[in-house]
Length: 591
Image (spheres, rainbow, N blue to C red):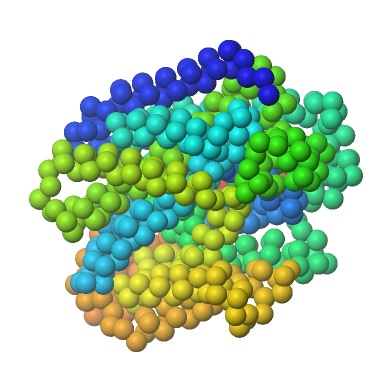
């Protein structure tokens, strides 16, 4: 691959601008912990929404989509498309509740909703469990994508790629805090989108592909185009569609798609100017993430089936790639090597942007847990703002170092995605219900965490050796079904055999966030003086369904037009427009 001085100049300019943004925001970010982690709670919806999109557009996402499409076709994307339901639930039900809570991190929520040792344990444990363990795994998958891109496109050794990506990201993340991350994300988002669409447009015109029509009619591709799996084959439609759309979206916990909101999505909602901006940010994120971005990745993945039909073809073309890093996900980077001078620089900058935007968000989010929910809460409550910012910057460096080490041991982004889904299986319903059902307590969440982790270890490590539960080779989805069932039964049992939270704790939470009173009636009836907020939950659920239909219609309208189905594209487009008008008017009418 020929990377010219023009391409290197584009990449260098990208690095310089990112560093300048970090330097520009460093003084204000260092003034207090709340500035460093929440930007003073004064951020507009458009900046927060773009940042969410940029964060989820990590370099491993095109690789993951390519892996999925090459193995299971376009329909395989339902494994993540189904999370739109989670996202829209967050938009219309939970965004305003998070903003009302006024916590610094979503983990601080535990000592607002629960009390005593159970709440303190949850906050401390999840600060380390999520802020360090989960966070490092996510960043390692992103770093793995960077390794594969650097190896294929630039011939770099894994440690060279990690060193370059890590140093620049750590510098601007540790200097600029969340505001530096948000502004850099905004800049990086447009670079990433230009690169993705530009690459797809050029690749479709390659001699090996010929045209969009040749791509869609090629024998390697024709069977991969359906939006839905083959409903005559249970081994196709159950894991690819039924499980994600019926169970996975509400039952599993996955960073960026947490039921009820959470993680860095909650961090951005908490930093919004007000409830309206929190809702607008998450709405824009879900539209852009699911309706706008996927098709360039999908088209490049389909094109790779013509140029590199098998993994062995990728290996033959790039013999320097280590055997443990070879996989279908590598096909995305392999296709980008055909790009011309100039566009190569833009695409490389876009991929670097994707890596850095995700890493910087996870670094700031993870360090916010370490600082606010562990160091300040349990180790040194009297720590000054200056000390807290210093701890945040040090933890940023350490998190990056740990994720880089783990990245060298991973081989597939899809493998990591499935492991994380398995570990969080069965916990999602708690995050949905805890705002609306008074009976859930701290031990509900503790038991769910413990059970889901043990069950995940059992199915991933122990059962393959002892074979106590037979999982047919083509029915791997049964592991998720079993995990959700066991975990959900376990935490429900614990909920009913343990005492509920004290009334004063429940009432304090209810007054603070004012959720719909349906699930709080038993408590509120004991206090006639309490105002029972009926809320608009049925309307909000309706808007969630309309919003989901709108985004899916927009996604498939684009797909129909690409496939040459003009009637299907027009019908789906009309549905998307009507849904959009309803959603926009509802949002504009918010106070």
